[in-house]
Structures are given as structure tokens and as C-alpha cells.
Length: 260
Image 1: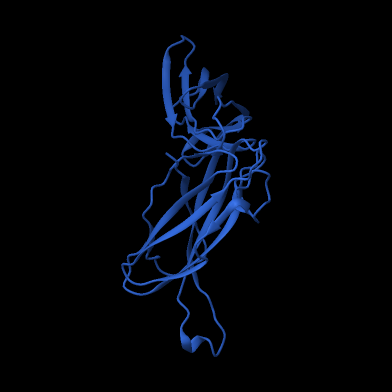
Image 2 (image 1 turned 30 degrees about the vertical axis):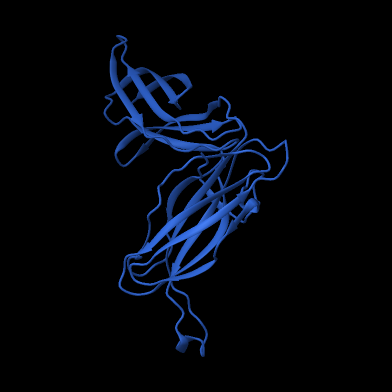
């Protein structure tokens, strides 16, 4: 059975009022395909408001650079963009009150034996006020309320065991106290979704703290930063084990933590 992997991300822009468009489809579906195959999927939207809402749809790429936060870029910016293979059933739609709409797309994977691993892009769903006839005489002023970024991921070919490593681990501080900031790098061909687990031991080798941070998607040759709060620790020196647990595999590193 074929599925599409979708993750909903809210992208905050300048807006007035609360958007009445919601995304009804599941937050994550996983798709597997082979070179030369065609995959179909949908993003289900609904207008839960009491007036018409206009939706603009377009594609961007999502980049998880190891040197900074995730950014959005023009289609085709990174070599694993799936956007060039995608076709959408609309780029502009007005939804009546309580109307549901299926935003459908096709992914046509090229017939190329070198294509292997996870490929991804992002479907941008921008909600704006509908165009009124009396606006056409004086020009149109679009007032963007909110955008949804729906990540579409296609896994091509047989999945393999993935590997990640820590690009950096640093001790930081925020308004709540000390935090361990770990950047995980995926050095494999397929997306991984690790959960970070931190175990902290005192000088008597007794476990004094164990914390799990929920998983985040880390794309091939990309990075994602995790923040593990450790404000519960008192002053002193500790030994710690930081583990990235992504289901079938584990990757860990030993740490020394000094709290002043």
C-alpha cells in the first residue's frame, strides 16, 4: 500500500484575526515508491468559518542547514527536492463556509536508478481574503492571515538502516535555566525521526536525571537541533549519556556536565 508522508507546520506571518481554514488530514503519512512509479496523495482542508475564504497553493523547499535554523527556499534549491516531480490539482481555491476541499497531488518519480532515499518539499497553503468584484476597479490588496507548510516526503527504493551523529553538543542557558543543546546530523539516505534521551549520573554513579525529548524529523545530509532542559540539576559535575533513539538503531555519546 502506498502512502505519502506529510507533516503540518504552521508558519507565522502578519495576520489579522484567526484563520478559519483548518487542515483535516493526518499530520504524518509515509510513502514508499520506486523509480518510474507515480504516487498520489491529498491534503484535506475545511473552512470552519461563516464566510468565504480564499486559499493560494504553491511549492517551496525546506532546508535544514547544520549551521542554522530551518529555512524556506525556492523550489529546486536542494538536490533532494521532490517539488519538480509534483503536480497539484489547483493553485487557487475559494472555500464556502463549512466546505471541505481535497488538495490533491501526484508525485511522478523519474525512471532513474540513481534515485534512492528520502526526497521532500513543502506545499505552502496561504489563506487570504477572497477577491471582491468592487476591488478589481482599484487594484487588489491581499491580506495574508496565516500560512500552513505541509511537508511532503517520498521515500524511494528499499529503506536502509540510517545513521546519525552529533554535529555539536553545548551547554546553554535560557530563561528557565540550563539546557543541553544538541545538533543531530543525518549522514544517511533516508529521513530519521530520533527521540533524544539524556541520562545524568552523579559522582557516585547514581542516576539523578533522565529526560526524553520528543522526536523531530531529520532529513538526509541535514541537521536538527534538540534542546534538553536540565535546570533540575544542582551545582556540581556530572557524567551523562546522550542517546538518539530512532527505532531500530541507537546512537550515543558520553558527556561531562559542569553546573556552576
